[in-house]
Image (cartoon, rainbow, N blue to C red; front, side, top):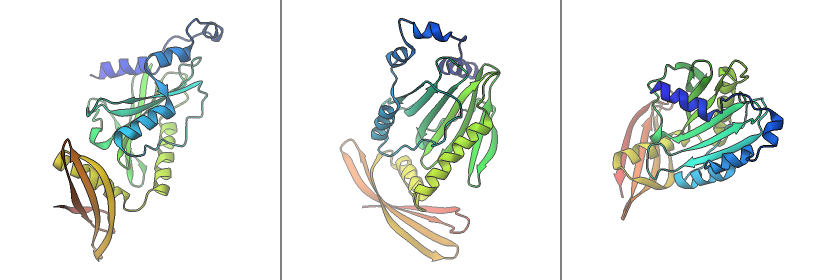
Length: 260
């Protein structure tokens, strides 16, 4: 399994012998044409397609690696309910194979386990833990973390000349976390939990979401209430979900479901 992932990384990261720029410019099939013929699309189109597929906004890291890229493109891998549904955005330099960087974004319910890889866990921010994997030379480097209701995989080449490493990937991940924290309301994490657990409990899609408010019951107990609308084929109904937690430690205490 590890060998196949490394091979996939070698191919998808474009780790190939260096190509002379003059040769590439005079090629009968330019790099960009080959990319789009492989099924890729403009990054913005891929993002919109996946946002429509998952029914919510996908936010990408505002910071990018400080190296030159010649192309940016994407794919929305839509397998109609499969666990591999995700967004992929790739940055490449057709003349410098080591300048290669990829972002993959999975809904948390489709999170990739990657248990066959030897990760190093570390604290990315005070409330976020990340995992980093560095494969053998000429394969890949991978940083994995979660934010809001998404799992992010940041991948780059592992070559002797690569200028992107763990520190650079960590800074990119932190830029996303800070951007989301500035944007999302305080109840967002509990809303994400309510949606994820309700989908798992009922095995149905959540097609609508409404925040009902917060109730502070005591110094050690608070509740956030949400109204979710579920649908699967011809069946649909609403559920009130109440998340109880400790307001100081943010430790979840219980979840209650009340069908309408």
